[in-house]
Image: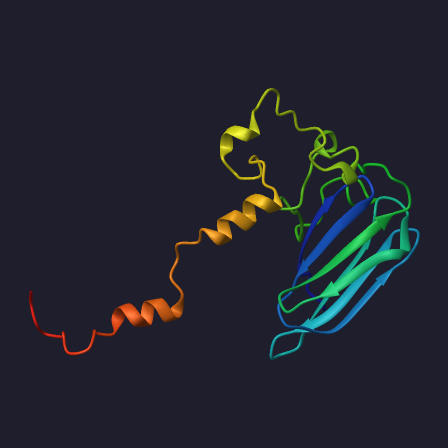
Length: 178
């Protein structure tokens, strides 16, 4: 009989994130069907213990746009929903979810907190009357090429030759005091 690995999930209006926690998974088999059937099987550990998940997702999915990533510690599946809408739960069946199924709070975003337009990240930020010029971050000065050239001409920094000449003692004066 197969065991069930821990499965974490989160959603956005257009995707479902499924993370299967199974370190050192071997012989991984993933199957996703358009009507929402999700199947996973693998073995893990020195004893090659079999693990399996067979669940019916809440609604239809886009198999071609969905992607899987098999890592050393877990298997991640980004499932693209067929329709951009929030699901009330992950599974089709009502009632209490299986004990191996948990919410992935690290990826979770509530429906009302999801950005309306992901391309305009930060567009809804209101900085009010905040004056960025007071931060002294540069870019506020009026620089031109002539000023930069004058700075190079008046460069008081020493060249390598000047530093070496100052460090070397002048002929025979080393060790005498005036």
